[in-house]
Image (cartoon, rainbow, N blue to C red; front, side, top):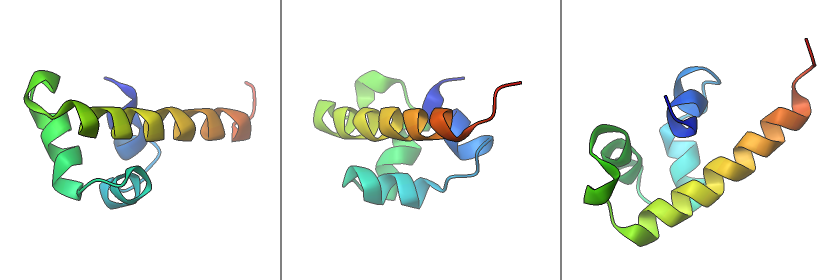
Length: 66
């Protein structure tokens, strides 16, 4: 499972929220989750990847250590 799936399924961040933060369409998120990454435009993958990394680090800073 990669980080995009984790943000959507485990943390409950909506695909629409991620899409708006990345400046892409919600169906771009769906396509990236369903299709092999080669079938999604490089610009879209880049925008989503940057947003996912930002969210990942924000969440990491908010989580309590176990």
